[in-house]
Image 1: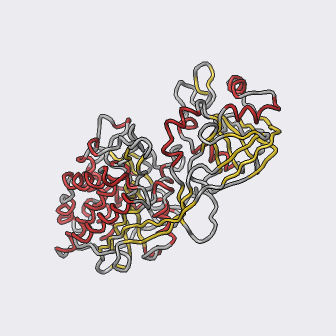
Image 2: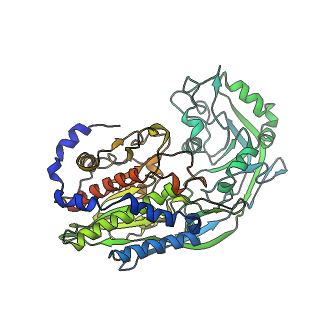
Image 3: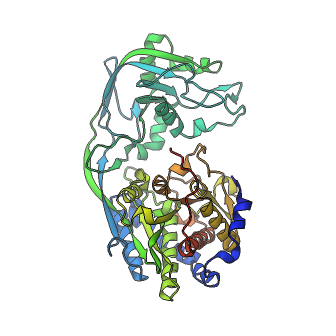
Length: 519
């Protein structure tokens, strides 16, 4: 989405880049070989998948802090490198579901992912809402009010004569591909919980067991915090048919009928959910490296990437190395920190202060960046921008034949000036294809909301999210260093540096001139 790019670029000419002769010297110090050196360490098996609060993440935080120290970058938390934050862990299981006094088993008849608080409830009514789709082209919610209700929906989407009712083709719509959309639709309609009926629950459990059994984490704020995600369970056809029993329908009969029309049903049934998951307290830390500015040192440019990943699958003895997600962004920050440190050591330090902050807890719900945004070390009112790097080392399917790209997300959401600066940095120095496909709040993947920049955007701080898209190894043990395109990483890292350099050195800080959009 390139709205107004031509006009915006006129605002900032190439010559507007501060100290443009010297900046390329520091940008060119960012090298693929150095990125590789760092990544081969933190994405190795020794670092155990860098799960938040665990040994591997602690090793990574220590590696980052030691590296900052070695290049002369002081700690950013009153001289300390760490900002510790408290966590509560909820382990998987600990949940009983009975339907009409029949008890069903976790991992056999139902499963759920992390992301919501323990929720126990009893209901005598469940509302079946077809496929749970609420789209301009097709909606299961047209003639039903589910406020305060427990809803039940089919996974997938309706097909008629081999074509999706939504896409009008053989291609699936985002309602099949993005699991968040149905939960969000039910939440938006006021539902209290959702049951989702997958086509093959046994295969889902086998495929996703690592995620299902991974513990939930949340910040320990000392008080109860409402869940961001709707209470949700994936249930077997056997459970669903028990809920449907009084209607005379089954999962199979409804799938057949919904190809012709939408169907909603009020199911009179007794459902009891009891959740008492085992909990423990833990802590993790953001790592803060601080390059103090000169005449505008009280204004802060922040750069973030999450150094955590999803750990180890002990059952299968597999490490989720997370080389791309987000080892790539983490080591990019190390190289950017070194470039700024080199500039400062040579008397060309930034006018504004630059906070380089690898954060933890992203994979558990953007926790580290949320903690910082609620407990900022430097006042948010003085924070100019957050440039966030999350996955820049691989190619997605769309760009399989052309690695010279990066997705830019969020650049126009709060500041047109930020967008123009990034465009001009690219035109001047890196000449990447800046892809704006996901730079919209209507993106069904919801990428704008899914990485650490969003916790700054919520505070009305302009952001850019640099991203290469997902690939076949996303969140799998196969996301390894040998598959990283380091030349691509080098170019994108330089773009982030050049953009940060301009933001840190120009006379006026960028303006927030776009009305924020709530999630």
